[in-house]
Length: 96
Image 1 (tube, rainbow, N blue to C red):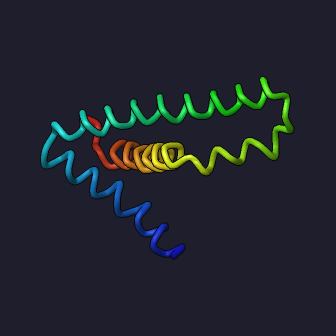
Image 2 (cartoon, rainbow, N blue to C red):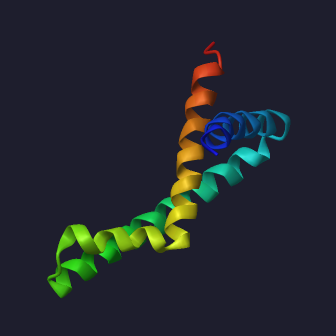
Image 3 (spheres, rainbow, N blue to C red):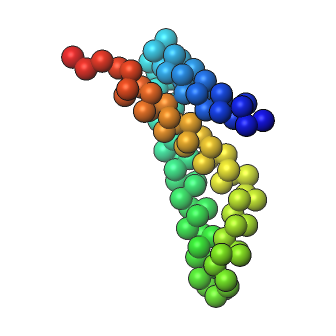
């Protein structure tokens, strides 16, 4: 399982880079999904922290409930892959 996760964290950004070279319009959609993911990820985090502050609960025990939210996990996973994609593009694209 760990090998699958490691290999996908390498393969998916390379696949994204290949797609954006073949179809430049895809780059816009990668950026748009990353923007929306960042908004959703940030809002979920902010609301979770806000609820903990309002309820005056123990921070370390309640904040981990955020990992049960599938939207938090999906948007965080996409942001991680997108970050690797942008690093790969910037690393492999030659400057003129």
